[in-house]
Amino acid sequence: MNPEKIAVLVDSCNDVPQEYVDQYGMYVIPLSINYSFGTFKDRVDITPQYVYDNFEQEIPKTSLPSGEDFEVVLQQIVADGYEKVVILAISSGLSGTYHMMKIMAEDFKQLECIVFDTKLIGIGAGMIAIYAAQLIQRGISFHDIEQALHGISKNTHLYFCLSTLEYLKKGGRIGLVSATMGTILGILPVISCNKEGVYHTVKKARGRKNVLNAAIDLVMNDAKKYKNYNIAVVHGGAEHEALEVVNKLKMQLPDFVHIFQGQISPALVVHTGPGLIGIGVQGV
Image (cartoon, rainbow, N blue to C red; front, side, top):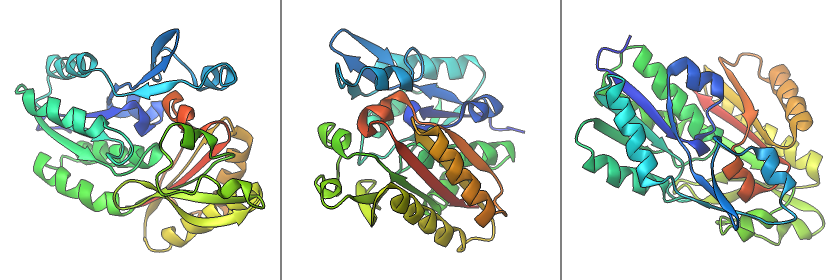
């Protein structure tokens, strides 16, 4: 059911699991991953494993989706019969993607566009995108979807733990997180995005096991605020640990509506390095 012919477009760092991209017919615009020897399109012609395998030789840079690629996607949306599009971008506090897409969408007169700054990244932004697609399926009006996105974003929380802060620091994405924290007695941060969409530390713990448990506790406390909730667990080269977290959450939060799982995009791998575990909760 989609009487207003509304499409959903996300950037590749929303980390919407492929099954939901397929289920809802979402369009994905890739960020770029730039090595000294060439440029790759995120999630298109490069894998997370490729980035991990080549870290010792080179830590690449990331850049915004190209304007040309963005216009091609918008033209495809029109060709596919849509008249309106909800565009969801990772936090403007972490990337210029939102501002780029907003400027270009305003100049593209063939579609009525909503460009939404999720103030989150990865699966946090992805959960908001999936919610938008579900609203469209339910026949919610274009105008009401925009209002609903502001509401759901306040109920969407993402926490993540890293093995090292080295890559966030080198990529200039460290935000309000202390880059020296991990070197002091093995203290590690649980990181989230603040209201401005910038990384900050929400909790600290000593050692990997304790910091993961701290993140799980934060998610459990958030889930208690909502009658219905979704949860998410993603990883960056840490599948075994991610499965352990999934099992813990399923035991302690058995009443979830949906659980989203997957691996983060290659572009996010660049800035987090190996070993990321991200845990999200969304009150619905």
